[in-house]
Length: 161
Image (tube, rainbow, N blue to C red):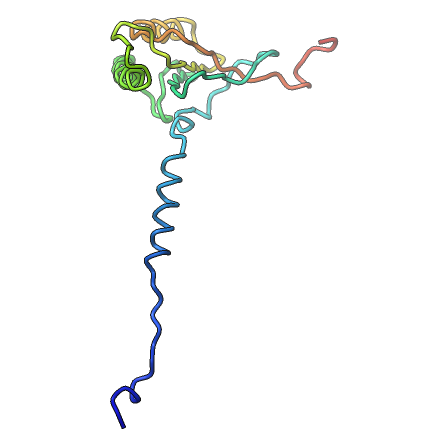
C-alpha cells in the first residue's frame, strides 16, 4: 500500500475571508460610533419648556457642557472644578480649530468656531454657573449656543394650552 492511502484527506477551511469581514465590521462600527452621547449627564433634571425643539447642528461639531444640580461642571458624568473646565474647553477649542481648518482652508485663528455648544444644566443650577460657562465658551470663540431642556409632556401643560 502506498503512503497516500494510509492518511485520509482532510479539508481545512480558509479563515482569511472570515477574518477580513470581521475586521471590516469592527472598523465600520468604530467609525460610526458617536462618542458625544457619552458626554450627557443623565442624572440631571432639565428645566421643562413647552416649546423645546431638538438640537439642529449645521456641522458635525458639538461641544457638550453639563452643569449638575450641585453646580459642578461634568464631563462623562465626572465632576470638574472650574479650572479643569477651563482647560477642557480650551483643549476642545484647539481641536475644533483644527477641524474647522480641515473643513475650510481659509479659516483664521480668530474666526468664530462653527461648533455648536450644547449647554445642559440642571433646573436648580444657579445663573452664575451658566454665565460662567457662556463666558468660557465665548472667550474661546464659540458663538453658537443651544440650551437643552426637557419638553413638557401633555400632562404637564396647563389646560387651554
